[in-house]
Length: 209
Ligand SMILES: CC(C)(COP(=O)(O)OP(=O)(O)OC[C@H]1O[C@@H](n2cnc3c(N)ncnc32)[C@H](O)[C@@H]1OP(=O)(O)O)[C@@H](O)C(=O)NCCC(=O)NCCS
Image (cartoon, rainbow, N blue to C red):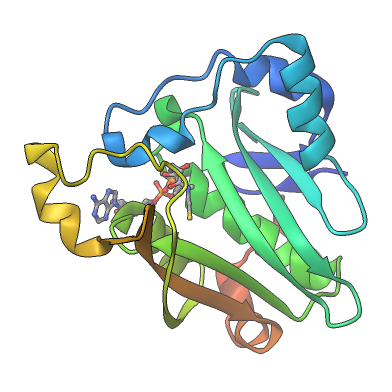
C-alpha cells in the first residue's frame, strides 16, 4: 500500500520506522516538547510500536518525502468501523516541518480515507496555540467543531513560571493539579471531501481522456 502525494508518499508503519525516528530532531519551543520523538531503548521502542501498530481500533502510517526520507507519521485512533469515523494524529520530524509536507501528505491521506477506506468523518483536536497545525488542517478542508478544555500532554510545561511563555497562559488553565489546555475540535466529512474533490488530486495524475 502506497498513498502518493505531490512531494510525499505514505506507507503502513513498520517496526523499523521507530528505529529511524530515533534520529529525528528536537523541538526548541517548550510548547512543543511533547512532540519531540523520545529516545528509547529496544523494549520501549517495541512497546511504542505495539501501541501504534494496526489493530481493530488503530492504524498507523509512515510519511516519506521525495528523497525517501522518513519525515513523519499519521495515526488513526479510536476507529469506529460501524459509524465509519476515527481520530487523526499527525507528527513530523521537527527538521521537516513548515515545508509543505504536512499539507501534501494529509491531503493524499484524506483522499485515501474517503475513497479506499470508505469512511464518513475524520476528527481531530488541536491545541489552540498551535497555529501552524491549525493552518495546515484548514488548508486540508477541516472545519471547526467547538472548543474543549482537556489535559495537556506535557504536565511539566512551565507555563506560569517561564516569562517567555506568558503570552500563551491564556490558552491554559490549572484545574487542581492538572494543567489543562484549550483545544479546537475539527472535522472533515465525506460530503465536504466530495464537494472539493479537485483539492485532493491523484498522484500520479489520472491521464485517461
Ligand atoms: C502540524 C504539522 C503536522 C503540519 O505539517 P507542516 O508540514 O509543518 O505544515 P505545512 O508546511 O504543510 O503548513 C503549515 C502552514 O502553517 C503556516 N504557519 C507556520 N507557522 C505558523 C505560525 N506560527 N502561525 C500561523 N501559521 C503558521 C505555514 O506558513 C503554512 O501555511 P501556508 O502554506 O499557507 O504558508 C507539523 O508542523 C508537525 O508535526 N508539528 C509538530 C507536531 C504537531 O503539532 N502535530 C499536530 C498536533 S494536532
